[in-house]
Amino acid sequence: MLMFMVQTIVRSSLISNYRRSFMAKITLGVTGSVAVQKIPQLIRLLQERGHEIFVVMTEAAGAFGFNDEIESLVGNEHFYDYHITDEATDAITHIYLAQEVDLLAIVPATYNSINKYALGIADDLLGSVVAARTVQMVIAPAMNTFMYQKPVLQHSMRALYEEEVGFIYPATGMLACGYEGIGKLAPLDELVYGIELYLHAGERLKGKKVLVSSGTTRVYLDPIRYIANTSSGKMGYELARQAKLMGADVTLVNGPNQMPKIYGINYVDVETPEQMHQAMLAAFADSDYVFMSAAVSDYKPKEVSDIKIKKSDDELQLELARSIDILKDLGSKKTTQKLIGFAAEDNNHEEHAQNKLSKKNLDYIVLNDLSNFGSDENAVKIIDQQNNIVEVKQAAKAVIAKKIIETVI
Image (cartoon, one colour):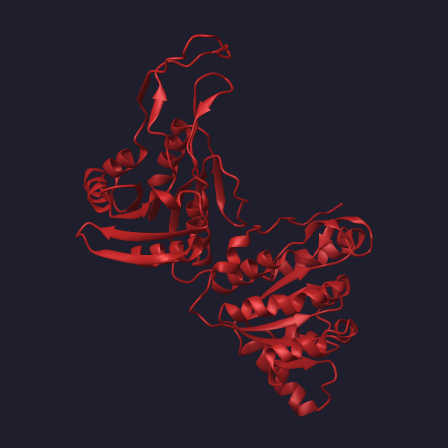
């Protein structure tokens, strides 16, 4: 059974907190799946992020009864369906919707529609839009799991992929038909992320390599006990995601955390400071921008037990030694890279951050208060070598990450 490039776009509830100043024009093609019920909310999310939405409904999609709600969201001048009959208007309409926008997204895309588009069949308005398109196209399939797994569908998806059509792959779960398996329309946050990924890929960081470290590290006392910290990995996650949206080739050196993995990013999973050090060194020389946002353990036990340390009535004495200073080592090896460190402080904030910036040969340091550790929001100061300070007030970490990258580049 051919399962063509079945992948899952990242799941992230944080994306709803992110707002873009950029406005894009998006033609949203809607075909006849029960997942049409999710389209009004998708439109709202895209509009909240500043995008202008044009909707083209097929006859099968219209049968689900959401036309009035969708039309009320986009306005009647932005709503089109299969009822358009005037040939002149139809000709102008399908060319405009296919060539004068920034992206064509088919959500949801049925078994029938994907196979039609792969064959070049244009027997309705949306098919004509697909046939005439000169812009990036992205498809989000939604169907019964047995239909999704059919070789003919996978062949059609592969053919479209070879024409540089993007895919936001379906999720696995209980389907509307009562079966369980792959075929569910991707969650709304994945749809928004996927649409913006294909919309903005190759823009500000096109051709650049970005290296990010994220999460905590663990130093072991014995085979099952370790010392770590409460870093969630959220800031590194958002830095990687925003860099990817700007078109960068992103590598994320990922310490232990609970964040879902991001589609299209190169992951190197690590656990200990030594593993993180080696992974960062391996990618450092070829990187253009390096964001060291991981919270690396500063100390490690001088002695590690090969067997589990048994509980006793006596106190346990731990003797700790300094762990590797990854950021300082990278700073000593820096050539053309821009190196960005992070400082979480609870007193004398700017003084400590500026000392770290100087001693570790950084280009920028991002200062935040320790109280934001592990939270969904943050407030930071971005400081450069000339002591210029860009202050970013409390906001979602996605917003903070975007501002950090924009300041650095």
